[in-house]
Image 1 (tube, one colour):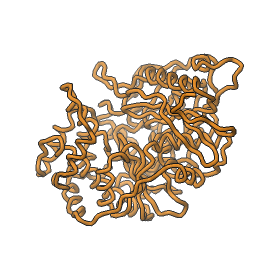
Image 2 (cartoon, rainbow, N blue to C red):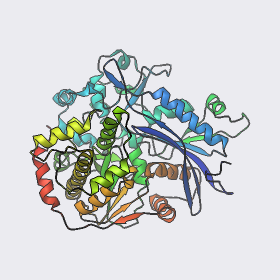
Image 3 (cartoon, helix red, strand yellow):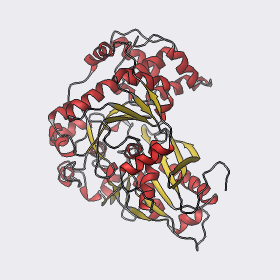
Image 4 (cartoon, rainbow, N blue to C red):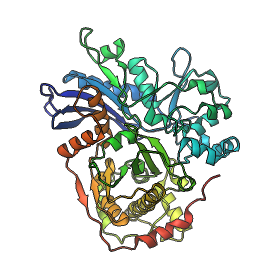
Length: 506
């Protein structure tokens, strides 16, 4: 056994969590047992859109190769009791009648959906679409991607659509299906009935027959195909390894990994490339007020609803770093954030949700352009740009969390921040200050841990519900608490950004 990987004791489960982000992918190994939840990274690889012929794609075959490489390392170092896959939402691959992939999947940051939502609303008005699907308007929702693909050879030849985690699971097991938490992000899933909205697809000339059967988080997808098992170095006489459907939308897994207590009035931010800001509910909020506030209702694990808002997130900061490093220099991000922390707070705030920040590119230049257009002091140094980004994120969190509470009728007394953003101490403290409640930060690997916990329950661990899963998280992981400080005028900062907000669609 490799010394730095958790070693299972008799009765423990040892599982693999494939956790895919838009900029990197990880294959993690976890050991779960009574009072035990240990996670270690085994394999990390870069990810990102590949530009070719004027379009932006995912190298999904490369992702599959790296997933298998990571699983091989886990299989070589000990038992492998299960595998779960989570990733970002909305993007998909198309299979022909023989199960062969019809081209590389598009990235949701590709420009092909520009102007498409307006075309869709001519057939299915925006208010009707929200009333059925409960989804926040984002120009890259799957329904808009499919509308953009109407008439293409790939869509007309397609037999099956698989969202990316389900596509990768298909290549491991040969089994076809759509896990519900990710299906709910497509704009073709009925938020009330929990079924595909095939009539909406038909009205939009989208072939609804390509939508695969739905499955639940916790269902067994299947076992590894013989050739995959052999690629992992497993012998034909070894027991087959099950693949378990987890909350395959990484945010659904991350929300499982929010270590809230039973009865606690809490909100959450899953902070990473995107920031997902919201509440866990039992029923969707399909009111006109929720639509006007552009909130989304996505399925969560165990019949919960993720009522949240997509905020541009740390993508803006990571792309800024990428821009600065183009000349070959290396940016010390912790040092940059420490320098930013010494600058005056709220000097420059911009609308961090502005559409100009969605595609890859020169983020510092775009931030400066937004500041100039809004009459804000224009940041010139790297530290000033970084400070503007984190201040603007905190302002956005404040606005969206207040709107979530108002439109849902569910308030909160504490805010959990999970994901990679928990390591950004400046942002965590500013978030507590802006929102006005304590922030509990951690765990940083919430999506992988949520993935693991759902697998473990399916494979026999005594984790009957979310309450038990979260109790194990609190028992095994330390959280960092940030108390709000009342020394800045966040309401005024919010008003400075507010005029830039778009009018609700439809």
